[in-house]
Structures are given as C-alpha cells and as structure tokens.
Amino acid sequence: MLKLLSVLLVGALAFGLVHLDPAPASAAPAFAAQSSDIAGVRVVVTPMILEPGVTIWKFEVAMDTHTKPLDEDIAQAAVLVDEVGRRYRPMAWQGDPPGGHHRQGILQFAAPADMPKAVELQIDGVGEAGIRTFRWALK
Image (tube, rainbow, N blue to C red; front, side, top):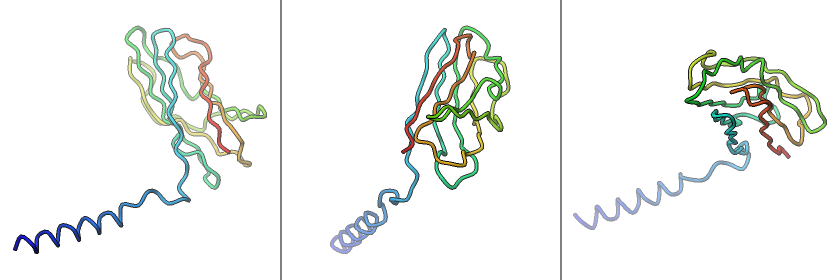
C-alpha cells in the first residue's frame, strides 16, 4: 500500500511539474513598478498593459500620504510622453475619487498607433510636488 502511494505521489508530482511551465514566450513583458516619494506623498505606478495590438494601455496608480488630502484629478494631472515627445492624454481614470489619504486606480490611455521605444508617465501636482516622472523602455 505504501509503495502504491509513493508511485501515485511521484506520478502526481511529475504531472504537476510538466504543467507548471513558465509563461509562454509570446506573453507580454512585465514592467517593474516605479515609485516617487516627495513632499510626504508616495506615488507608485505599475504598467499593466503596454503592448502592440491592444487598443488601451493601462497603468495602476497608488497614492499614499499621512499629511494632506489627495485632491488632484489624476486624469487631468497625467500625460504619457513617448521618446520623440508625442504627448497622450488619458482616456479615463477608474479608481478612487479625489480626497482622502489613500487612493488607487487604473489610468487608461489610447494605445499609440506606432509602438514607441520608450514612454514616460508624468503626473503633475500630486502632493504639490511638481511633475513626477516614471519611465519604461518598451523595445
């Protein structure tokens, strides 16, 4: 009986390893989160979708502070800039409304017609800190 359990366990483990392959080579690359800590406000931006063939690019944005309310309209405060200076305004902010000390949501942009080599997300005025800049290489 113990031998049968051992064989079943080894078989199940082997089957599990075969099906625990890493993500396929065609999966979109993961982009690292970047953060900015200025004037008592921490902003963390994580690209979610930045790839050719999609119509909407998405960035997760989280803001935290213990000193002042986060009253900025993120859709008005943000702009995406490519490596040649083309500027893209957000289509939407799906997240917490202005106010409070902790906010998060998804900032959405129409995907550029041509895939840029790099993008820079600029967010102006969060925590009265001026422009915060987050950059990612895409190619």
